[in-house]
Length: 369
Image (tube, rainbow, N blue to C red; front, side):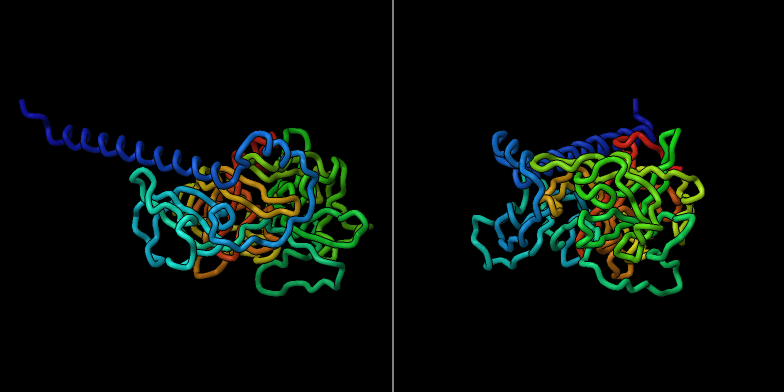
């Protein structure tokens, strides 16, 4: 008895989907094996020693073709050839510098394939946490047709400048107010640990200012919230999120309307090739495209190099960087639906890194307002 053509097509599709799923699982397994090899201490004793170290200002970037120094991200994404898309998923090694063949020792060569799986190497520069700080100096407000995110505003809106106060006031800093969230009882400003809690250093109750003191915020007049809780950043292990919340004492001090964008319309899982946008303290409005939703990265903080697992990678549209220093904490949304997909926390001039928004909300036990 002859099988109907529709059934044949269905079985063929199911077989293709099964093979594709197995290949994707293999890519992710290879990615995790290599990121653990390159980003984590080799033994438990060393890992415990790294985690026990007190935070200290990190030294200069090590420039070397050795993979343990040069690789800053390992993910699953589309293979590029001469900057052109191929449609092929690969294990992606993101490196500070892509050295030409012949300019490095063979022992430092990354694999051209892993157990038959395709590999791609992409130059991204150095990944850093994207706050901005400086010695005290006169503030230069930004100008343009979009709202000024560095201005004092009441109610304060997501996308604007916020930040903590350095002990001793030798430096001033600023990051971005990402979103308004609630735990069912109180309202909070959502941003990064390194924007609101100074990389684990501050205690609950510490004041948060809008605008950040780097942008002219006044200690006497611009306290808008107090640090409530944060997810600690840890050395020597993989982290999932860089996030914190600060409780707002009065509802009329804040709004959920993101500057130039409007309120978020819930959340949605990030997908490769999704077009997204954000409004941040430094670059204001920018649009981008999601390049990866599962990249493990190594980020430079003051406290040291911090590893993260399963992060979102975004590249800006129109040959513009999607973010810069000071944009840390920005909420990233799918452009077509206004649904939040991630919380921006790091990157380089060419690539932006974000936590998955559901991981952030779950870690802090809050929901978007």
